[in-house]
Image (cartoon, rainbow, N blue to C red; front, top):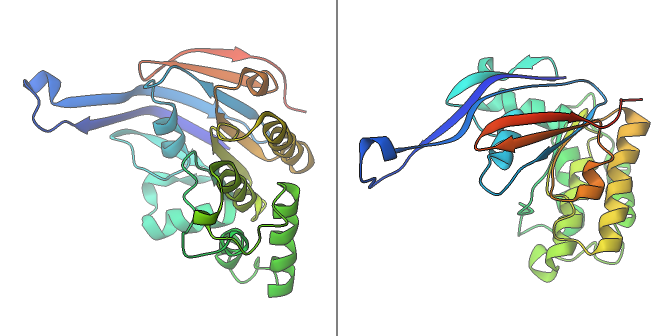
Length: 239
């Protein structure tokens, strides 16, 4: 489902004191393979490259070096439109910083992925509306359908983002700290949603988290340190 080889990401630093300091290497030669239906958690200290790795695997960014094959596609061969189409049809992403559209209500934000599906997969407007309402109900926001992001708390915005990520029934779901802005009870409910999606639809999950209880339910834990894979811990086997 996901194959990454020699993933490297470097950034130029303006005003560096020396040439050696002018390049910041965030990821350094990461190899990773994730099977269909597998749940992989990425752990590591702040600055270890977790979010950068997640963005490269999902095709949100292009690496300085290396390659990513995602859901049967070589991302290097796709232009921006092709990558966007792949994400619309096969990928879900839960952002740590929400990335909701501020001029759309909670319900409208969740409808966006359904409206971007190709005609042969797009549900009818009535079915799309029912799906979006059902997802918002499952994350506890049935009373906030018509609220705009600015009218929602951080935890509520996160729940809208989670509902949106589920909307297109993705083959692969990437999640960056999906429970980080939630209270304990809601966080546990979201974890159950994530693993329910995996079990019911064999959705592949790749999750960045500091939640050790969540990580222990994964099949493998990838430990990052200094932009490199320090070790990979096998926790369980995909069903």
